[in-house]
Length: 181
Image (cartoon, rainbow, N blue to C red):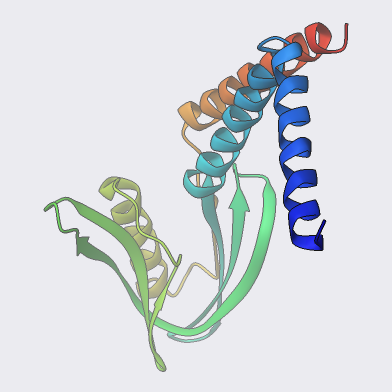
């Protein structure tokens, strides 16, 4: 018997044994797998849609604004921070997708060019326009020396996060109980 034929015979036997083992453990194995997939889908969607940016701006000199931007997950878990110097204006940038739908993000106009508040766009225009108004008022006002804006996370993101995670973990635990009998 050659090594190649021995290898394929052993591989075939391993696959058959694995499939027999899975089949003998009822559907619990697949329920655990589906539960795990539900948890992962919930986490990926939460990480994608649950990001926000908090803004802390300081007037360093007349018409010279410096903002520290903290990216957060679900409004509390810091994902990173960065600083944008010499902000002169803010505006809402619109992106039109291939399907014709618009998404938006806040852009700061600086001495060094355009800097996005976030690296991604999203569909809700109103909060972005409100933030631009706050930043514009801060830039134009010589009386206000600090601007703090904390982004609010939509309630449905929490519901989505706990719903998907709870459903997936519950499914895994119930299936594990059956599986380990």
